[in-house]
Length: 159
Image (cartoon, rainbow, N blue to C red; front, side, top):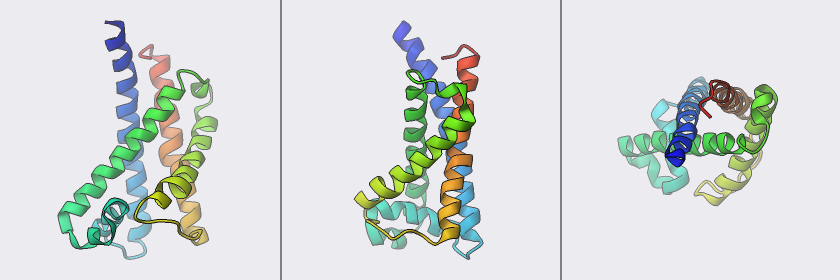
């Protein structure tokens, strides 16, 4: 019974953080690239590109939906790492500090480990506006909300 309660105590903050961070992060991407004239479907197909390669752009709605699903899968993994790490480290004491640091770590991991291993491959440093948006979005849309949600669950005794 204790294992089921423990799993539930992890599942709730992970799911909430993943939904919150995933939604905020994709909203940022859609607005940022939308201002540059990139349609939402193309942004989501760009996520699918990492898995499918160039054919993602010719697969229409399937690649668009797959991109959205992959985005939320990644958000769930990112949230899970933070929530589980918070059980061993005092991350919830300073969610703005540690969440911000975590957002930066996610940026580095995604851009220098995950994406180079995908169909996207290694790529040059993006132009400054895209770089700043990417880092700031992961701090404000992913790291800090995940930190705050983790702290809220710990304080409510649902940990």
